[in-house]
Length: 244
Image (tube, rainbow, N blue to C red):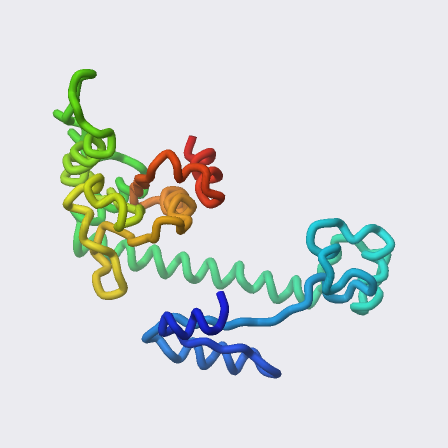
């Protein structure tokens, strides 16, 4: 994204100069809007003959150029897959931080379960992938002679499922597929309306990939609706293949 695009969206936009940490602190202090920090880099930095060129992007540097790059960066050329001790020590601090964070999360979950046992049970079952009892009872069906568009039929089924499956979430463009979405998921999910069950997307945005990430994380059952034609877009075939 270009700086002008970020500013037009109302984002805080910054390009760090000599002290990136100062820019980051300023961005974190503004909690009223997203922040876009643009950092200019040189591709293949350190490579004597390929930095800043397309050769450092799509092709291996090669054994000789790798050795020269390590030498230019002050590393020993003969070492492979070497992690400096200082970096290793720093990265391993994340292990203990993770333990503390996980213990704190478990304590909060236990307190929540004591205060709201029914909701806690529903949450646990949802995360475990357990569907509510009777979720597929009396679903609408049609015969071959019924004149009904597939997206309309899908919408009718989803209307029923949305009443029975609280975790059902629409991850689909609002502009095209309003008739196909269940009415209970038409409430948008925004910064001011978190309980909404529809995440707004534009037509060509990679909602398919976001759907996969949500499904992989768990806790929600996202669905995506699109036209078959759009499966040819570069952002859609990957998620389609992964879903299959």
